[in-house]
Structures are given as C-alpha cells and as structure tokens.
Image 1 (cartoon, chains in turn green, brown):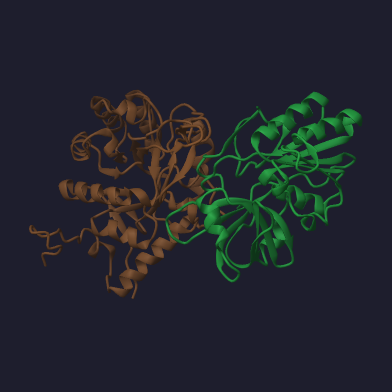
Image 2: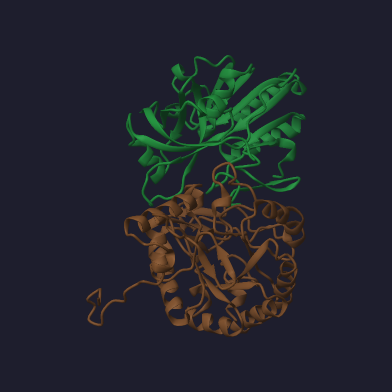
Length: 256
Length: 315
C-alpha cells in the first residue's frame, strides 16, 4: 500500500489578496499540516459542479498546527472561482501529493531560485531549513511578496524585477551567475521552482558551473496521482510522471 | 432491504456493475491509497499494446468545459512488462480483470488475444480498443478503413474464447453499422463510447493547447452522446454493453442502467474524485432501496421510449 494520503473537505480560514498578483488561502486540516513537505502539492476542487471539472494542483506555502496555506495567482477560471471563496466555505483538498525537495543538504549551502508561482514552496523550504540565498525573480514590484510574508526566512533574500521597479533589474539568473562566479560553486546546491524558461536557464548555469540541484517540474495534470500519464517529464531513465515521480527532479536526471 | 447488484454477462458473474474506463485508473496501484479496488465489479486496464509505446509529447491534456481533452497516445510498457509486472498485482487483488488491447495490425491483435487466453485465472474478458483517438494505425485513423476493424476482430476471435467487447466510437463511422459487423464477427458485446476528438486553441500562440491538433474529449460534456449510443446499440442488438462517457455520479449511472447498460465504466470522474466509483455504487444502491428495486435487472433496460407524438411517456 502507498503512504497515507488524505482527501478532505477542509474549512477555509482565510482567502485574501496579498499583493498585485497573489492570493493567500488558508484552510484547517489536522492531518495535512503534519504530513506535508516543501515541494509536495495539493489537489483542490474549486467547485462542486462539473464546470470546471478537474482539480487544480497547488504547492504549499506554509503550515502551522491545524492550518495549511497556499499562495496562488488568478490565471484562469478555476483560480478565479477560488479567489471568490470566503472564510467558512468548504474546499475539497487531496494530498500530500508528489515528492519533496531534499531537506538536509549536509555540508552544501542551499541556494533557492524562485520565479512567479514557484515562490511559495521555496519560501516554505527557506523558513524551515538553513538556506544561504533565496533569489526571487518577478516581472515587476507588484508581484513581489510583501515583506511580512518573508520575515521568517533566514537567508539572504535578493530580488530581481524584469522592469527594474525593485531590486536588481533583469532576470534572476543574473544574481545566480554572480554568486556562482564570485564564490565556490562546488559548495552550493540549487533548488528551483518557477516558469520553465527560468528553470531551464538555472539548470544551464548549474551545468556550466558544475553545481548539483533540483527543480520542481510542472506539467498540465489531471489526476495528480500518477494514473492518467498526462504530465510526463523526460529523464535519463525515460518518461517519469511529474505528479507521482516528481514534481522534484534532480538536475542530473532531467533531459532538457 | 438488500439490493442485489449482481451483474451477469454471459458466463461472467460480477458482484456489481461498476468498473473503470480504460486508462483512467492507473496501471496498477496508483489509486490504492484512496479507494478499495476490491469493491469494484471489474477493472478494465489501461490499453496494452504488443510493443512499448512512449506516447505523445507534452502537453497531453487540457481542460475544456465540463471535461478535458487528452492526447496521451496509449503510453504503456508493452505486453511483456504487463505480464511480468502488472498481472501478478491483479491476480493478488482478485478483482475480475478486463484487459484492454490494441494492435497496429491484425497479427498484433491476435497475439494479444492468444496471450491473455492463457491467463483465464485473472483475465475474465477483453476489451478490443478500436477507437483510440490519439494513435495512427491502432486508433481511429487506421480503423476508419472498416476492413481493418473486421480483420482485428476476427484475429481476436480466432485466438480466444474469452468474452470480448469491441470498443467503438462514432469517430469510426456509423456506430450501429459497425456494432452489427463486429458482433457478426463473433464479438460478445460492445463497449462505448471512447473519447470524441475535439480541439482547444490557445489565443496567444494560436495553436493547440495540447501537443496535437486534436485530442479525445471526455468527462460530463460527452455523457448525453454516450447515453444515446448505449441506448441505440442495446435496443438494436440486445447484447452486453460496457457503457462509458462522462459517468460522473449516481444519477448518470442510473440513466445508463435504465437504457440498458450492463457494466458502467467510470472514467474521467476518477481523476476528480478518486472515490467516484464507490460513491456511484452507493448512490445506485440508495436509489434502488428508495424505489424498492430488489435487483439491478429490474431496472436495467426499463427505459420508456418517447411516444410517437413526443409525449415523453407512453405508459
């Protein structure tokens, strides 16, 4: 039998806009809060009807006793419906799904490279485990998490915006390359989550400097448990399922 | 009151009519943490091909109104792997297994049928998949040439006396005509419908939202179409029918039973609610209790056709 999974009707505790782009949703769950690890995801039904029909995967943002938070961007119909949910509403949530980021890195120093919707799971990781750098790339200042959401992160937090409205102007890989170039790359381990072009650029840099790492690879999913084979990822051992074998894959295993 | 859910299909007796549509329940234990598969009447496997298939590129799926498009492309590890790694799992599970098979040629269909003929302790029936929307030779593309359907079905029948259902869809042509032909070639029943080919366009890229132009549409969106074909085939031929196509809740399942379906294959609903099969089973039982229906055979095929003047009920 597989490890215990939960499929619960959870009560919403909070659902509010935290900046120009993201909503933070919190729900009550005595089970999920104890089990989940950074990198894993939840499969959420945004309504009880048949349109939209499929569940949506969300990564975890933060957990505390009895409480689970996710951070999401309103991108389409599903997330738009989700953003209309209120405290006290019920939400069908299934998880924890997928594998997790490596938590203990031994002597290696952790660099987290986050972009867009990839920010939440890496903040979750940086709040719980020693981290040297958290690099965050967004299009503009409006999409950055408010400082209050980052105060528990014990790492050097560096930001880039593509329009230069906050932090360094440009892409997040600029910061990553500077760190790898100026310091001893072999001392680091990179963990990344974000849009695919960003992760591809991160992996290219990691290979150039000989650094190991992990990426949380995302594909359109239906079932979330490895049944439908909709979300395959090319690895050196053949096709793997992002939902069940991933979403976290070692850089060295990914065939890009 | 106890409701008798027993479902008999020729020589096969199942404890209830609930099964899973091919390709929607994983390859073995993907749903083991969520649902007790031993409670199902039968399990229909993901389609097995002789050789391993890598399937199509990503993205393979996208959501559409009340459903989804998929272009998985029959990804599977092939016959040998299935026998070595999957059959032992199902043998242990002890649920009657219906193996879905697809070949690129009549020879391959024959080989698959012959192989499973030798495993009657586990395999109780075959579903001959003639209607995958996402592959060439083995799917609707190749099978549109109707002599290929006949060849495939003959090849299967020539190699096994296992119960065999032909899985067809309106994508192949006239459903009733094709059903008549495959039954004449010795198929025991019909499984319908498969997904229907559809499209979805990304406005930004002006290209398909999946990696192929077309994908197979499944989910609640196709249920009325599936229901109609199940009704028509059942009425015309009175043969065993495995119904699939958007069955999402007990209401849907009961509608299919009323038009005569023998087995109900739950598909896309599994992706949304892993417990969908057992929830539907309970819903059927509750309905029967409420309506004082003792056995499913009293409900099956009880549909009252619309009156000639369209009065809706001719009772």
